[in-house]
Length: 243
Length: 371
Image 1 (cartoon, one colour):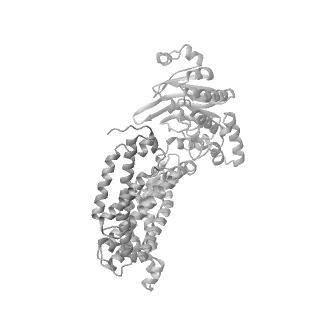
Image 2 (cartoon, chains in turn green, red):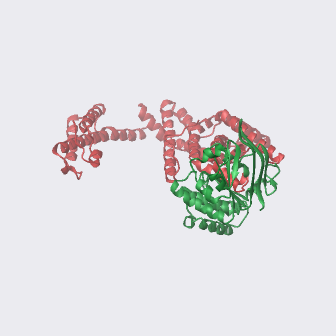
Image 3 (cartoon, one colour):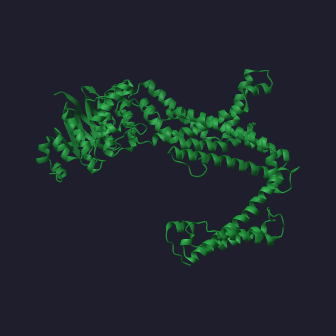
């Protein structure tokens, strides 16, 4: 399988604090990788480095053989192919749901408005929000907002989707509707890297689980392996509540 | 004296200690009657018939059960209610007769006086009325320059704040980085200088520069010709625009930086460039959030344009000086001018607050002041 993301010797510090220490990670096409770990372990930072929302201090990140850390790479072009879904949804407040989705298509991909709207409506229907197309994004519930965010990212037709704790800000009752969308996405073969605390989801949907602790990848294995037979004591300690 | 309140309607329409308020009103009535020089409607200076007349009117009102639920209440409450209405009406009539009507009488007398009256308030009224054309011209000047200055300043501020928030990125080409740095430094310097100097000095400088340039363009023309090109209005409008631009730049910059960081991150994650994210997501929101501040700037300008009188621009302060010089009176004229300023700022504040509420935006509390 083709390798989409290759991370080599990644280092990232915030002031004096080393948040990522010598990270090495590969993601293959079609794989669903879940990154789990305690707060402050560097999971979100690692994810945000992949689409360069955080600039690494050292190391390399290759997206299909293009080095993101090279200063001459046009990051905007690469970001078209990397979709990101945030914990706080981050829908554009000055636009309604449909415009949220079409904005990037018309501005970045220079599509015609009608064509962009057709694609947006298709994705919004797929996540179950067909009735909310012209709604003001502020009137939606958290789960609906997150589904719009997922549809918005999918409208750009990315090759990989990054999810930064997508359900952490949601009520437990509506977590399911977002996870269902993500599961369907995984079944359709989308490459996904998900930072999550939803262990059930990680267990059922992911191909590989990565456990991070204090800036290093402590353990990396299949979900069955990690959840039934964690090797490292820290992993056992973290998963003790879920095992 | 504890009264049983049966429901909210009773509470609203019928204060708990009506008897206390009743006595308060009675005292106020007595005071007004004592200080007033008489009744306007009766035009006799005999107090007792007047008082009897008022008492009769008040009693008539109090006895008419114009509240539907009055018959439902206990006798004591009903009488207390009546007593309260009685004193309220009595106070109202006295206020109307001895207070407001007398003021109107004074007002009309002052307006139609043949020369400047001796008394303080009559003099104020007389001078204000006689110079209403001058005042109007002053108000027009003030409002024109404030409005144009605020609007042009806002447009300039959009440009300046855009320059101000540029951050040279490692990934930009060197030429772009240099341009960003120059733009940012220019915006910073500009706002520092303008915010660090009083508008009075600024208008003197701009007027002098403009005048000199106009003189150079037409060397032999008389001053009146030069004034046609470089008028005081032009100097004032330019000054206020440049001034407001500096302050509004900071407002807009704050507006952009106070936005949730996620807005920018989401835009960039979708592949939008810095410029696209600014123009399509961040700036529209920042401008919309800053509209109350722009309204405030307009009101602040109304007050601050008073310094433009130093170059001879005909606005409200200039009108003030003109009228004061015409009548050789000081305090009376200044108070009228102050009242006009207050009227302008207060009414426009209320108007803007009303518009803000209608458009679902935050309204300011009180009259805005410059910080």
